[in-house]
Amino acid sequence: MPSRSENILVVDDEQNIRLLLRSVLESDGFTVSVAAGVEEAIDSIEQRMPALILLDLLMPGSDGMTVLEYLNQKPPEQRPRVIVLTANGRVPVVVKAMRLGASDYLEKPTTPEDLRISVAAALEESADAAGPHLQIPQTARDETLGPTLARIHRAVWNQDIHFTEHVLGVLFRKAWSDPAWFNLLGAVFEAEGNRGAAKTFYQKAVNAPAGCDAASRNLSRLENIDADPAGADIDLGEQETFLSEIAAEHESHHSDPALSTRSHS
Image (cartoon, rainbow, N blue to C red; front, side, top):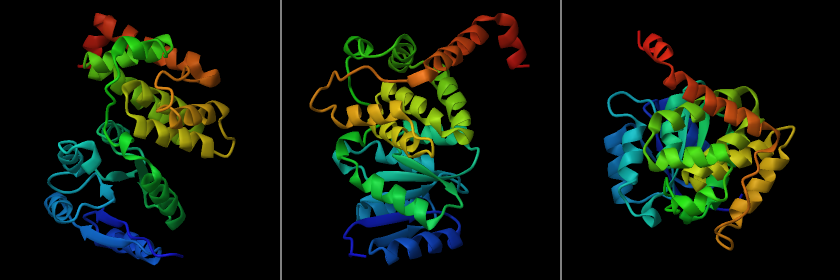
């Protein structure tokens, strides 16, 4: 395999995982640095900005979110791509990481093949997707979205965190067992303005064994969005009604005082 010039930083408190990831990446010709914690990771980033970071989210003391928040203080062109490492079922954690700008995630333990696929995809992504949110005027953006996605987009602008976290969380749990739901996750992240995460989830839906035509169209449209910023409507396929039901369920729950009281008891 040809030598690669990119530097990759592996951040994980478990030595065996650091050694495994480093071994696979170095065998592919990458230059690899390692860090066992957040402070060590930030020091490494300051000394030599990596092209990509493999970041464990759950570590003793400060967790991986601290690194993502630190990176978000930098200009977009100075932010490396980030693939987060997580245990299966850590839905709220992964959703928060993607909203903070992570470009992909890998379940632990991962395989060398999945690692190579995710690393290649992350390094190929353009820098314009690095930031967690695109600054798209609300009125112009809503014109290209269906009612539910427009509602999500407005929720982001109005900082209605509970609404978007609810929708993302429900879809993420479904996606663990049915990859076709990744298309809807991509649509929600695109409505948020997180183009990098949207591409990741559209690609995961396309790569599913059964494929996903709607996700394929969304991915193609998103890749050409610079040529046509308005673009075409996001294609949700046959599951559009389910997204509306998820949103309606949240609205119903939070508008019913009895349900709200029970949920906090």
